[in-house]
Length: 254
Length: 203
Ligand SMILES: Nc1ncnc2c1ncn2[C@@H]1O[C@H](COP(=O)(O)OP(=O)(O)OP(=O)(O)O)[C@@H](O)[C@H]1O
Ligand SMILES: [Mg+2]
Image 1: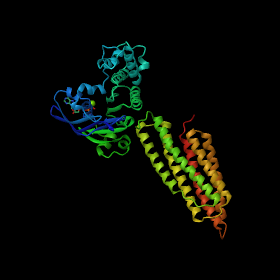
Image 2: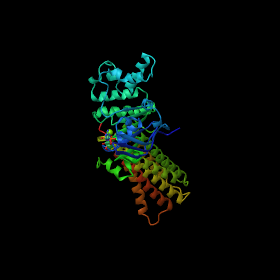
Image 3: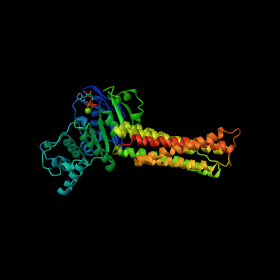
Image 4: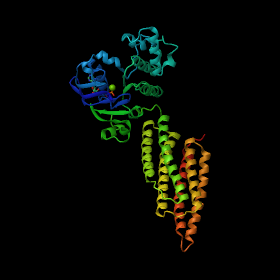
């Protein structure tokens, strides 16, 4: 069996002629949290979007190289199929404002026909909200619009929405960047639980070294479109091999 | 995979390594007691190597814990205590090894039974000090500090005996050297106890 859930091979991305990702050989181990850490503009989001092929939606992009998911080359696969088992939560909470809390979570399984009855759908919605650590806070107002939730709750709703498709890989693009520390810790905890209990593979983008070290099993440091260093979190935190990594951890660049 | 959920879980992990190190130290001290009682040679070099390895592992784990969770207040002091205690337990194992070497240099030499008593007291001090740490009990730690004085007296008396004689019998000289090493073991037990008193949050 493949030890890596995701592996890229000489991945290059250009956006409007700008070389944004340069020969990236990245990997993410199965059932672990791999953090992509790096300063603003280094290419973290671009790398994440290459993994679920969302990058193709960005106009003016050119992609070269390979992306393998569980050993399978995704660029010769159907992008919609890929996005069914590789789901994503983005930086700013973006629930669908005109749907209820319940509908926000239910929409994915419904569209992908993952369920056959209302009972099954209820079960998935509850499961996803529980895993996102939001159930207790919303169980009595599932028909409210998400706009009545706090920012941190909205972000956990987006996490539940991403989970409702029962993905094997979860991509998180700075999921706690715009929320308070208590909600941020809740999301970190929820994600670790998912890895532990459901065996999900998580790729987590952050630009904060402290958060990277706190949540990661493995850390990939990217700088200026290049993968500078990759290794177990402990190694990167205590014994980084590259001077740039060291400087970044100390808050001297970025 | 090694994903841990919380700081508590990571801390339990370090404590488990420390507990292993404690067992190595205790096993070494028990072996020393038996060797003294039976005047038999003893080799503890494998235990010493294992203790050193465990100590190094704990250092790394504790440093990573600090980097990862950025503890403050008594939690930070406690992690520091775990680092210091791992060093004490390693040194204790190494002193046990030195006693083993001393015994093995003169196999068959009968060592005074009082020395065996001191060895037992030193081992009990280590055991109590470590229990005080894990159970977070101040009174046990205080008790260890008191026992230290007893061992100091035994060593001073032996030293006095050796210093006052023109010619010292071999048994007496060896006993004095071993008491000195046991006195060091007791000192490290006392350091552990002091660490407990320093690092524990006031309840
Ligand atoms: N749609 C786009 N059009 C033009 N340039 C883009 C576009 N998207 C990204 N880029 C460029 O690609 C580079 C990498 O961007 P990316 O969003 O991947 O960085 P990032 O590491 O996620 O940064 P941040 O931490 O600020 O989110 C940047 O130089 C950015 O300007
Ligand atoms: Mg980004």
